[in-house]
Image: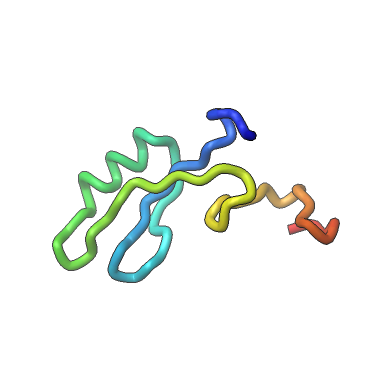
Length: 68
């Protein structure tokens, strides 16, 4: 189980099914407050290591031992 320092925060766009922004929790909330619209609804999303939207650092190895 990972600790809270490993959590990555991001802004998810419902309409495009994409991650629009990554940052701290506070930065993401600010981004949502500034960019959320009915046409492109946004939500705060977070991921832990191993979850699909978790972004590995460039020097981390994937399951096959390959660098990302």
